[in-house]
Length: 118
Image (cartoon, rainbow, N blue to C red):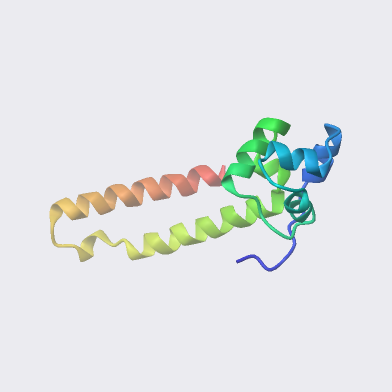
C-alpha cells in the first residue's frame, strides 16, 4: 500500500506527556511498544482505532499528527471522486428515477469536493 516513510509527530506528543512507548502501547491495547516504534518511525500507518486513541490522548487530529499522510489521502480521495464524477453520466440512464438519483449523487460529490478545498 504505502512504500515510503510518513513523517509524524507521535513521538513528540508521547514524550510531551512523559510516556514510554510501552506505556503508550498499553493505552492503545497493544502487547508491546514495537508497533508504537514502527508508527513513530513512519514504517506503518495507524489504524482507525489507533487514530481515535491518539486524538483523545493528545487532543490532536490526524492532520496534526500525520500531516503528509493526511494530505496524501485527501488528494487521492479527491482524484477518485473526480474520476467517479466522470463516470456518473445521468444521460446514459433511461429511467428518470435513476437519472434523478445520479444527479443527486453528483451534486453531493461535487459539494464534498468543494468543501474539502476550503
